[in-house]
Picture 1 (cartoon, one colour):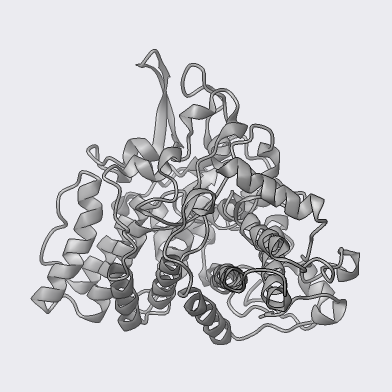
Picture 2 (cartoon, rainbow, N blue to C red):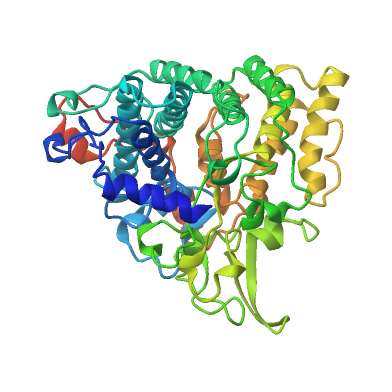
Length: 513
């Protein structure tokens, strides 16, 4: 399946000569025109494929793409989960992890650029596909809805990371379209909700080579996520109900490890994923899953397996949070070399979630998809919304919230959550469960910066607690000290890249950057 998808993407970018991407400082005149490209259905398919492509495949120079490590580098390193490993020597990455970065940080710029590149591709598809006269009208309409779904996702990331951002909903074809101002975030959210709402008219599921595509269920799941992020808990429960009653067939895998099993991709718990390609040759370009190699140790995990680069590592306080009977532990971390099935040597824990044992000695053969939203998150969003809207006074509501979080805990092999918690205690329990469930899935940062039901974000107190022994902190580790010392409210938003402000006088900087 993935080989076919990859060939389509190559056709998009090479054979057809297609590119419609411009970032907010690039000279659009240097791009190949799309004017003659959208003439038939095949070209429309290729155009939308390219918008999917930006999720996990790098398209211009840097080794990392949005979900295939760029989010790890730009915001994952700022959390209480990640630190740079000993082989992570890039000063921009290390400064992010220590919370000493500036607006000139190249990684932050790349994340900004990649999102707007993808958005402009989506805008081109949305604007131009309806003008095509050669093709199946229903298919062409579906492609537009997929492009809207993806545009909604890219803007959802942007508005959470930077707040007010330029809202561009039409293709940028000249420099005149680049001198734009920041749009208030509520207007950006309105467009996000509109795009996802339109995408609820997509099919419920696909089969075969199309299984990776956006569905109506995925659109509802992101509307649920947006509602919780904006503390609209009534709408969150409404979206959860639509998902439950929509005939999508979503459920938790019996085994947590199946979320990262190549044989189980795009099934059951996977609502929307970024696909990767086990092509054996393109790891440096981000077409394969590169997270496994960057987090693996230089020494071998197992006989016959390749070695990693030790660039992404778990912070010292993370692994001890997992109970010994938590089934997620051995999926999330590896801390030993195995020879003939016998433990040979112990070492500091490494992320293990995306390790593909079928990749043999070539890590560029890693084809594990990157989950963007799983059904487990839908369940935990429901528990959170029920608690914030109704609990814990109403016994029936309390039962619903507890039942939801216990589904996640029980799948992990843990007992039910302690009964009788207050609303604040239950909220803390949900956020903690999310922390354990989604390690290295690029979700933790968004939890740290969103305003929860208590009316505040948890970023600052969470990172300050890293050096508080009474809260399980480690007062001597270099990275925990840096995070705890340097964190402030300023980091609730990323800096607008300095190069963008220099190129566009209509852009303004976020506070204190």
